Length: 332
Ligand code: NAD
Ligand code: TDX
Figure 1 (cartoon, rainbow, N blue to C red):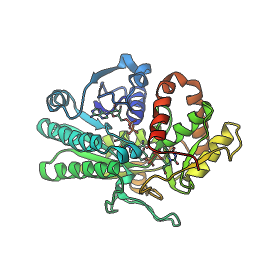
Figure 2 (cartoon, helix red, strand yellow):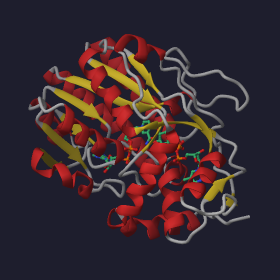
Figure 3 (cartoon, rainbow, N blue to C red):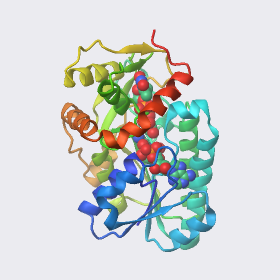
C-alpha cells in the first residue's frame, strides 16, 4: 500500500491504524515533509513502514512507487484554508498537479486508488437549519483550498469514467485527534492555553463544524478500500455538530480555565458558515459507525495527548503564531 501524505495528521494516524489493525498490508509512505509533515509522527511504527521523502508532483518517482503498489491511498495535500487565502499557489500545485500525477501513474499501472477529500468542496450550509450535504450535492467551493480539492475530486471522477481507473472517493467532515498541526483550530486553542496565550475565535464564533475523530475517518477509508464500489463517493461524518465558540468554551472548561478567557479576532474572509455531512450511504452500504461516540471524551483525550507530547508540537508553535500575527490577527 502506498500512502501519500503519511507524515501529515490524518495520513500518519492512518498508517498507525493500518499497521495495528490491518497487518495484511505492507506500507510505504510518500511524503514531501512540507511544513505540515513530521517524520516523528511515524516514530512509533517506523520499523513497520518504509518512508520515501518525495513530492507527488515528481512524475518519475511517482511512477516507480505506483508500479510497486497494489493500492494507493492519497492523503497528501496542502490542507489549511487560512494558508490558501494568503498564498494559493502551492495548493494549485500539490492538490491539482499532484493528484493528476498520481492518477496518470495508477492509470498506467492499473492500481486501485482511494482519494481522500473534504466536505468543503460543497461550499457551506445556512447556520439555522438541518440540511446536510449528500453525495448528490453540487460542488460550490469557497476558498482556494476547497476549490483545488474540488478540482482534484473532479479529476478522479473523470479518470474513472474516461479511463476506467479503479478509484473511490471519500469526503469527510472536520477531523480531530493526535498529531494535528498546531495551525488548525482545536490544536491551536489547546496549545494556546498550554503556552499561556488566549484562544482565538474568528468573528463571533458562530460558525459550525461537524467533528469526526481521525480514527473513525480512517476506519471509513479502510471499509471503502475493502467494500466500496468503484467510482463511488462516500461522505463521512459523525453527526456531531458544534459551533466554534462552544468548542473553545469546552476546551477552556476541560483545562480548568474560565470559559470566557478567549479573544475574538477578525473573521476569515469568505468564512464558510456550517458544514454537515449525511453519511447514510457509508453507514447503510458499508456498516460504518463512529466509535468515538462522545466528542467531549475524544476532545479530553486529545487535550491529554497535546499536554503529554509538547516535544512534538512546541518546535512549530511560535512560527504558526507569528504567521497569524503577520497576517493581521489582532484581538478586538
Ligand atoms: P496535513 O496538512 O496535516 O498533512 C498533509 C501531508 O501531505 C503532510 O505530511 C505534507 O508534508 C504532505 N504533502 C504536502 N504536499 C505534498 C507534496 N507535494 N508531495 C508529497 N507530500 C506532500 O493534512 P491532513 O489534515 O492530514 O489532511 C489529509 C487529507 O485529508 C487532505 O487531502 C485533506 O484535504 C483531507 N481532509 C482533511 C480534513 C481535516 O479535518 N484535517 C478533513 C477532511 C479531509
Ligand atoms: O484560530 C482559529 N480560530 C477559529 O475560530 C482557527 C485556526 C480556526 N477558527 C475557525 C475557522 C473554522 O470555522 O475554526 C473552524 C475550524 O477551522 P480549521 O481548523 O482551519 O478547519 P476548517 O477551515 O473547517 O477546515 C478543516 O476541515 C476540513 C481542515 O483544515 C481541512 O483540511 C478539511 O478539509
